Length: 464
Image 1 (cartoon, rainbow, N blue to C red):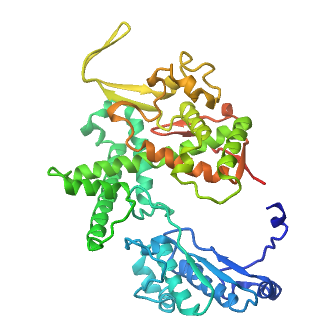
Image 2: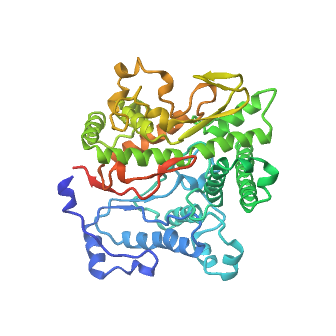
Image 3: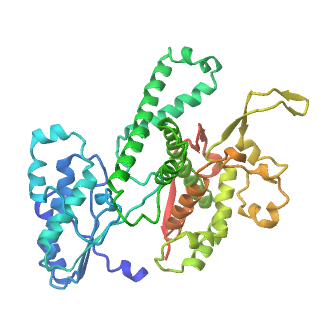
């Protein structure tokens, strides 16, 4: 691998310009030396203007293809597309799909100002133009050593939620709504709904809730319509997302959930799966970057199970990473993604000299619990070995509750841990990290999610 870097030659090109604006010397270098093309360049915004997305994803691909046809030693042309180009299909086959428009018509439409005004930010330009690029390759790449690679990540809802858009209305509403709700918790006079909704914050919160409900309702309706259109397929999909499973069970029961109840379940997953896992990953990398000896142990474990291969980190492999498990647990002890939880008492509870009456709401600070020196000696120290079996067996089971506990614990904890482990493994198999700042220099932002209140700067050092 170190020798490979010496063979890298950077060339200048621009997909936004006809002919790529590549120098003749660079073109000659490629024509007489290149053997394999991996075409991965693409737009990265789902709501990029149609004209720009067409230029990058369609015309840029056409320019690359024309250049490739002149290459004397070319053995294969690999085009990276996206599975979401055909997300309405239950089974994605290794073939080209047909669409009601070709790349020539799309190019003309993308230059029509009236069409651009009407379409605004629709359709999802990334997915749409990547699909049209496949038609281009099929038509123009006849007899060419061409391959299409369609990567995808299919998660809880089993559909494209368009979270990568720059100005995602739902995501903005969610973050702002949670901020307002957290502020309201510390203003008891605003716990009275009618009084709160008379204020500017209350009116804003109500409008954000409407956006949130509209978005989740659209998810459910689209998923139901998609399931209906696929109902004639004989073979069922092997793996299903959370919403598919929920709707499957709902169709089997004699007492199905109402649309409002379905919405509540979708809300739980959408709210719980956004900032929480991202915060956990950031804190883990930050702590590993400050505790290099523990990071080195983790690298040794990863090398033991993966060596230098590109083997995918599947469920079996991830379950074998015991030290990574302990690192994540220790991170969530110090920085629980959800810093407080609450419960309503169903009966009177006596704590010391105090009697807590039935029906009141009790708020528990996980930060205080997780740093209680009675259970955690030297509580601010990062020490993954606290979670070795011999160290946990005598510890009170409620001394560590990052996902809450009891019958109302976090419904998505297994999914969250799987996401965290998958992403950390992908990063740390290729990089070592080193923190610029130490824990005492970072002031956490406490809201419904416990995350850094400022930038966490890290060095990423390639592994040899």
